[in-house]
Amino acid sequence: MPEGERSVRLRVMAPGDKSALMAILASTPEFKPAEIVVAEEVIECFLNEGCTSGYRVWVAVEGTGNVIGYVCFGQTPLTEGTWDIYWIAVAGTWRGRSVGRALLQHAEAEIRDGDGRMILVETSSKPEYQQAMILYGRMGYLPVSVITDFYAPGDSKITLQKLLVL
Image 1 (spheres, rainbow, N blue to C red):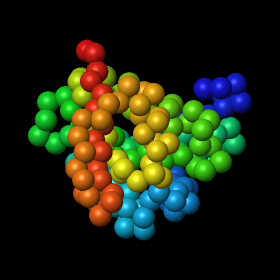
Image 2: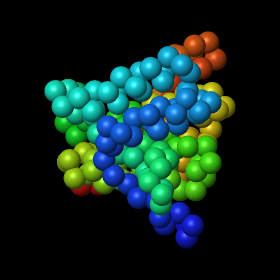
Image 3: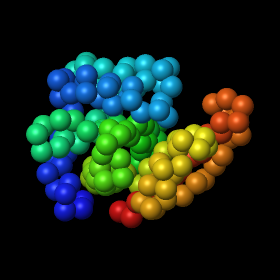
């Protein structure tokens, strides 16, 4: 991380982080209300000890303890070594300051430790997602498929893949 962001640390999400994450999601213009509902369900599943989804959620916390971003990832069901990055979001004032990169790097390290061999990310083709595409590209993710008009007319699904060296 750049010099000014060294006070940012990553840790496993705690129950008290939920409201901050929901505020980040609500203030992220790329996410539609229905998508935020799904993100909340995934967060709730992670926080519920009885949930067997395998979701992992890590948060980025700045020096004073405020949650400024998160990543949610997990092993893809019924696969051997394939993992998905489900959600990644960073508070608006922290975008462009390497927080997303740090979260993604952490997820990749955990995936490698979990014998992951491949990571998939699904994202939208809409212009609002261009910054996410740039981040993924810089991190070595390559587009492997496009399903035209998947989410809605004019909004295609792009699947990105990163192969991990074991």
